[in-house]
Image (cartoon, rainbow, N blue to C red; front, side, top):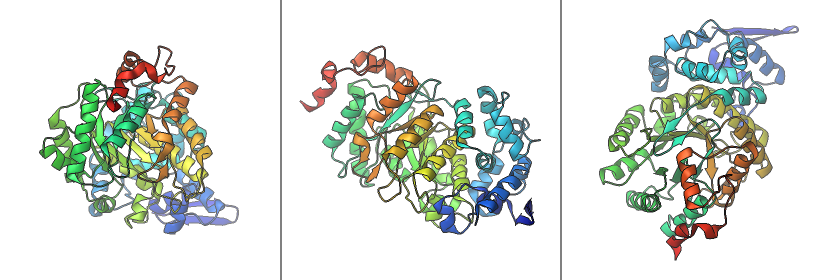
Length: 458
């Protein structure tokens, strides 16, 4: 059905919900590249005004990608919880924004509502929100997950220790792990992006990281971020797999470009749960996403990149993950051109993920050819900390020497924790105190107080 809004003498008409969502999106280079962005600021405002009047129930009758053509659409529609949706089913998108910003939208109410929201609803309301709205609502959303520790509790802020190495050298990776642990990083997980997706190399890294974890009784989980089929083979070989990782997208065709489908993810989820390696819980999946992945795969179906991103969260939500994060600036300036677009996208992603019930983190990052710098990342980092982000990355010097992009450092996590009075996951915090890495006031202690970890290299 067409959607219309009048500004002065001009009537703007949007033929479908898909086009309306695209035209209402704050400006970003990916939608311009796809030829679906609003042509002018006035058209964008007209689309946003028209979108504000759309009933939330419309998203249950008009799919942005046809049900019969896309298994992600089928997942969204078939798993929608109408009982949970009842609390807001009478609202328009604009009314829903007001409800989210009001006193009725408590953490408990938001948690109960999450199964009743579709990704398109979350994306739609985010397009009507200012930055402060995205932060304020996301901060109220509480999503707690568990494996060997508890991630996402109020007042907590976690990190994935990312010790990548350009040749997967175990000693180099181990050095980065120790470096990160000495700064209190690694409670979300110790997660390595392998330089090659080779089963033997992946098994070697899994065994090494698990040995370090066991040697020092670290209450965290490890992950080698290989393709899900490689991880399944590693499980078949008896490797110590904690978390199963996979990049996912918001359309069936995007996931096919990653070499996965929902059936394969179900197989992997079942295999991970069967291992039963968690001690605090069994949230055993880790997913990464990023605005622009569907467009870069030619798999967006004319849907704007932010709505596609939100649909990826439906895929993640189906598998009760421990961790999800948007690698927000990694795909490049073709999709998010500069620091302003990256910051806005990171806050949108975090908001939508949390609203949909996900343990949402963010890789606060950019590539070296984007119009962005570390000041932009400091801004996004601080805003995400204020918004209640579950976790960020911890990388030596914030410079990933294997993936060749800029992210956040071990020091950056210390900054956010100290600035906002946030603490690591409780089980990990107790370990840091026991090891003498932090004192009771979470002040970093000299490396000499933690000689046991340094013994790895003596």
